[in-house]
Picture 1 (cartoon, helix red, strand yellow):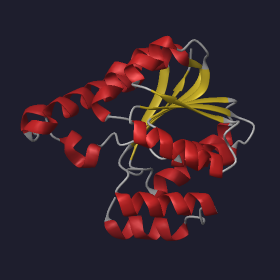
Picture 2 (cartoon, one colour):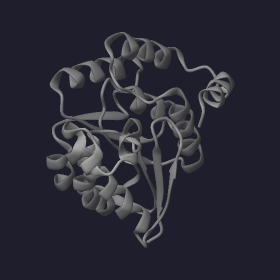
Picture 3 (cartoon, helix red, strand yellow):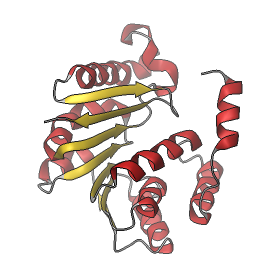
Picture 4 (cartoon, one colour):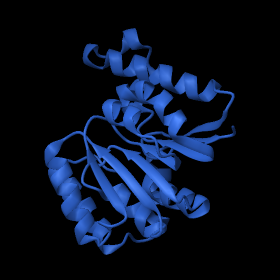
Length: 211
């Protein structure tokens, strides 16, 4: 998608809520990665259609996307996992400010350790954590995802780096690129999923679990 198209699409996006705007400004000021505006609009639409009763998010950051989803389906319960202690504190503060502390539970820990311990299933799982870890989270995510549930994964293009073969990527990104490509190939070929990789944000993978 060229820059002019992106600018045009973003000009049509509806205004964010006051708390979302505040968190986006905070994220820009302190360089915290959160959903891009077009990706946020896409998530809003999917959540509005699906109306999941239970959502699992891996990668809370400052709580932006969890709050966004809670605003769309205020009756939903959201579990969100964050490995960084400072981000956990900031997210809990923002969630309380949004009045959603009784709907959103922030779990402090590494997704690779938390997911295997979870037993409750979910109608939607949103992964927005370390991209090289998606492949390691996949099996537990599939175990926890209900039939007809949505798997949503952000940053799957990884700023264009995933387009290169791992051996052609910068040395520090080779493992991430290799793992991310393996993850995408696995999801897109999985018989139990109906999946698409879309040019939204930094590449959004969306899949529905058929059985």
